[in-house]
Length: 210
Image (tube, rainbow, N blue to C red; front, side, top):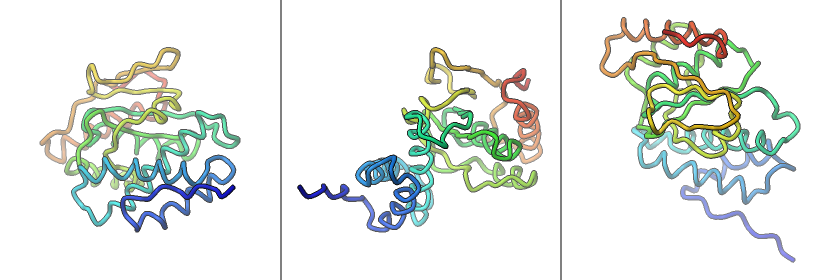
């Protein structure tokens, strides 16, 4: 019996992007699954992205994060690092800021994600600037929608201003960090928000930053 072909992708340039996660997850997920997650990751970003020429790169990063989370949920060997998820509403300020800082400070000891209940097209002005000042890698600071596998994979969920839309996971450690939002704030205020977040990222289980 002939194996089914992977589903069509919404952008032919995604075919190259599909090869990398398919190789990484060979033996875990069929090519059809990889293509499906990649296509499903592309569509919401296409609705909000401010720089359409970067869509395929952004979709590949988002799909890779989702596939890694799904592997964790499925108990795949080598996918067992503790996972921390920061959730905001637009996923454009506090949540990607805190996630990037924790990723930087943890140096590979945990897997960190951020997502939004109502994500927008790009991070707030000055967010990348103040992150770069710490030496953190800012390439992951991308507003993304909240997806089931990323939520289910999280060992710790830290909510930041998403209100009633914040996910509630019985049996998971949940925290809320009441850090000020960066909306329209000058860069000096954004640096203070960064430092307030950074106080918590040294240990995400510690007392939340005030």
